[in-house]
Amino acid sequence: MSFWTNLLIVTHVLVALAIIGLVLLQHGKGADMGSGFGGGASGSLFGATGSANFLSRTTAVLATIFFLLSLALAYVATKKPVQAGGGVMDAVRKEDSRKAPAAAETKAEEAKPKPPSAPGKEVPQ
View 1: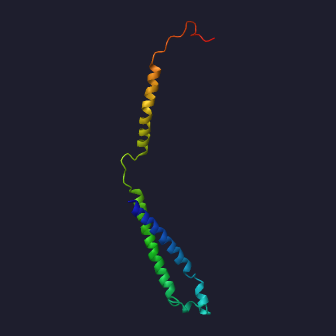
View 2: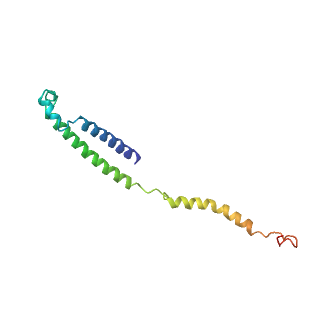
View 3: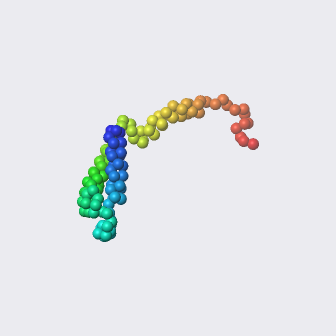
């Protein structure tokens, strides 16, 4: 499952970078005025409006893919398989069971009878 999650994340980042690049390549609203006065946009590969159409459609497709990848990553993150004993409290219980024998030894030492002290030593001075 880790392979598919990593693949989704890498694809998600690449699509995000492609969207950033395409948005930076697109012309703003005021850029069309410059093409009428010899700006050179009309002589491009796609024509004056062809590039805007192509870039807009490609950006829309990549935005849709980005949205679907976001949903897929959210689904994968919330539907992780439950591992045997994978809870937080299970780890605490395991740690307590390791400490339990040591605590039992300490209590056993405390329960041993102590030799009586010398007479008159019971009262502090």
